[in-house]
Length: 224
Length: 364
Ligand SMILES: [Zn+2]
Image: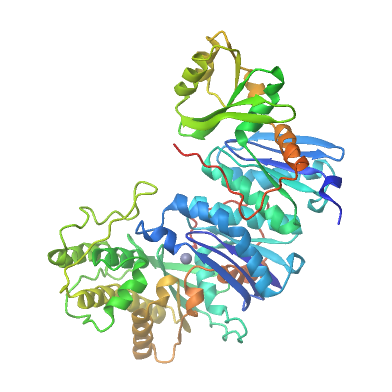
């Protein structure tokens, strides 16, 4: 059997109504991002099929699976996790769960400022957490919280240093954040979670030999 | 044709391998009954989370028990509905992905149809039973459903009647709760009713004229009134909350006084559920010239129902056989899903990668 490193990594993120899939490694760097709404079951596998077709691959060509493991919307997370587990069952691939908020935060850590990343948890709630960069990875500063958006704005307001706030934020929350001089809010298209960031984080885990047990891996729910 | 069936519509995580729709190679069911017992009913969010944990070992065990590996799977079938959305999507997405990755046909199965096709299954290692003869009438009774269906051939259904309120299994659950008998209610009532006098208490039957529909909500209210004098004061104020409204709220069980006539109450209650089911099923079988009467669903495990239906059919219809599946195929399982999928695939019913869960899926 070929080792996982000889074959590309499939990335799956259905943590919220914004979904994405990606294919990275061994000459591949492809991703699809779309608004799945609550129809993740309808679109996720169809998009994976499309992504592989675009890249001239079949399922047996895959070497590993990485899945966004939450927090996020409960059913969205379960769709992503079920597809990932189905792939492991059918193809016997190594599986890597990756924190959804870290995926949102990762692209901004190069700024050397701390990053607060948010994901929409449904019913107007946000789950968010703060991250900072380390040498070759990212680290969580404080445990994620599930709050109304104004608690996130308040947390950003009380900071003295420069900070980036990214992820799924509604217009009202963005408007409140941009009035704060020390807060940097990337524009909406740049705040979208990217499967490429998922691939990078999974790569760190892969390098450390930290694959997940497909029986034990489950979504991080973080209800209110 | 070896089909992998996957079932996660409610509170059982199940996988099975069935050959040609009749021979069961393996049938694995991870029950969540214990998880939900403290809540007096199925808590949807808890059920969905448990499916995510159980699905991989359940499928792996089903393959190992059948003595095949992934390459030996000829098709993958899943329950698409009816059921709980958060639970259904686990089985549907795992099944779809496995079928896609293995390049095998995918079959989307109606849970109600699967229950009916449990009557075609043989126990592992045994010869399958002779196939039921068409036309047939099937009484499908479970915790979620009470349906009377006529079937003229494979995949050809005609709706005759259904419950207008509670399902029969739900009525058993609520009755058991009123009598402090625990959960699930069907087996608890059956146990408590043994030796009881089914005629001691007059409980209402909703006949609903000539229709084939059922109603059990009045029965529940009548049992509340009958059991009230025996209830200990510590009981909850609102015993009729179907499932707990808060997702993880504990259920406080009812307690009756020590000398309450529990056996007679349970037997009278059971008889009041069974009688309309039996009378209407036999009437439908007569009207439609059925050559077989089938029982299906979890409540088909109820002995009083089996016995009464068999006796009534023999008295009215002579030699029309009444059939019910082995106990393990009455309650939710995946062998019935893989079984039904065989007949669907023969009709060319194949699902695509965009197949969805349908929580309110109807049979006809
Ligand atoms: Zn069922």
